[in-house]
Length: 359
Figure 1 (tube, rainbow, N blue to C red):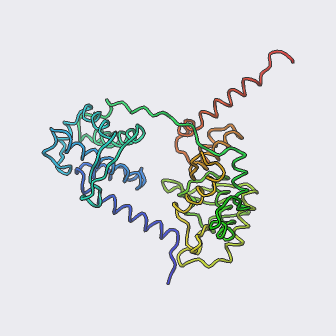
Figure 2: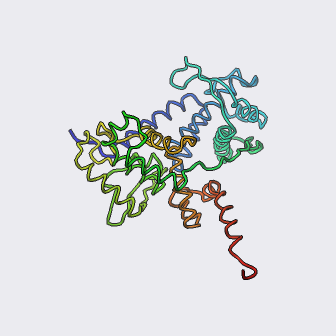
Figure 3: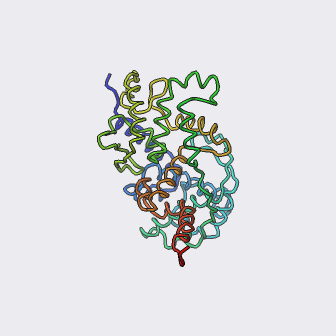
């Protein structure tokens, strides 16, 4: 039996997502199909699915909650009906998003309750803006009502990350297994090198958990201390790691060479105890298991380890563009927004550098 490559798995996953999008689009107005076809070259399939869910909620709201549209179903919405949508309807939609219920997309008999913070509302308004902007640009509608609706205010939360001493304690914990339960210690001798390599790689490169899951042994070149990853959107880049990370990875790879992976998982970098590629949820559980022992008051996820790396990189380099490039942010303003607090810290330090009189 021929084993599947990572490319085969990626293709299978992509096909499943495409079918999911088609199922969602069947519930939506015809214009949505035009919209998704139009943005296909510039967006990922996951982005289009997120848009589809947001549009599904909007048209459900419109045809169930607004009297002018209650005689229609979403698939009945024509261009003339779209022209009747006003900024007031969209503002009412944002208020509706605070708490509502609607049928599950796979099983309409199940009514699921939902709620949204301002962040969730802002994302859904952004989806609507993209949809109406496309229709307006193509001359399908005469105006874009979303432009007259203010984006909900989002209060930025401070970055949750590990401090330097917490990183040291975390790696020490993985190495020695102290504070683990009896059951966890029983498995620790089998997973110690893997877990140390996994968290060291996350902390030492800032890669996303989705990128980490897809890593293969063949993606690594230790002659340059680099590895190849596929970013969001499908772009492939090479990232580099320190000698400290290389040493820990090599030790794990020596152990990894003695394992017998399941068919289709031969090249996977990180294996479960069942000798299959580790998935996203497994990595999340591993991170949580160790970090809760080190800092129980912080809810540390793989993404927070990415924030830890970004913070440390910015402190060391002071170059927001390097941080944005390494983290794979398409817009440097995204990076600036997340690390503004460090900017302020740097400015405070700078204020003490210039001396007006000799001391």
